[in-house]
Length: 134
Ligand code: IDP
Image (cartoon, rainbow, N blue to C red; front, top):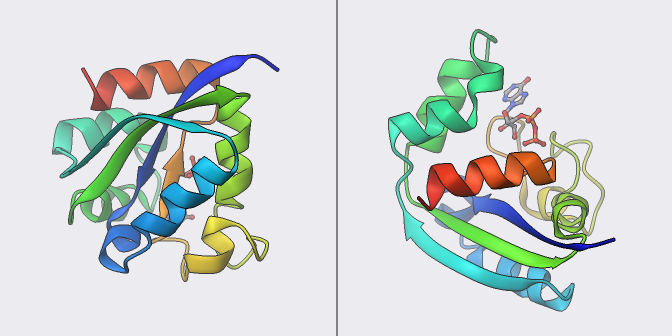
């Protein structure tokens, strides 16, 4: 496994419900390094670019409305195998299926508000870092 960078973002429900500190703590305990971190809104253009693959799906409009609804924490995280490591810490997309001990398993309630985003490949990570930290 090689040294990687990934993009991860604590979504509006994660910030609103007060899980920022715990999530950052889990990343650091897992040996990951926080390279960049910023609290702020996601613009409409950033949301559309990040979720382009879901355009046209029934949940797309709701997803765009939700991700732009309040402040998020945008992060670049690095470490050995960082892309997969963050995905493992996140847990399954649907919080109902996410294992206890994962971020979504512990803090997520519903599919539409699932606490955290993480790039699904090194190529996505590079693209998403460009979208959110240009
Ligand atoms: P991921 O976030 O685990 O990579 P993706 O399939 O890439 O999952 O979906 C991106 C985001 O779109 C999810 O995190 C979730 O917020 C939202 N989403 C995906 N599928 C659904 C759905 O069926 N209903 C509502 N929201 C969904």
